[in-house]
Image (cartoon, rainbow, N blue to C red; front, side, top):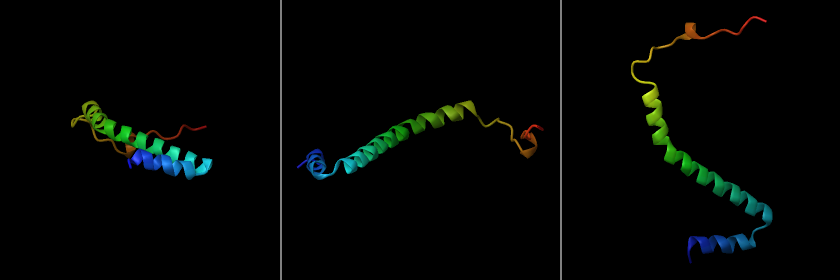
Length: 68
């Protein structure tokens, strides 16, 4: 029996609310995989935008809240 067939069998015995939870989890897993696929590209773009010659910033460089 395939995983899909096992899932279908299990789903047929579950109440609707648990099926919704399983659907949410499946969507989460799918999104997580998409994120993992994009991570190397995002790192590469970040490294290209911010190279080794970036200045070091300290607390003095932070703006304080404007006086009201």
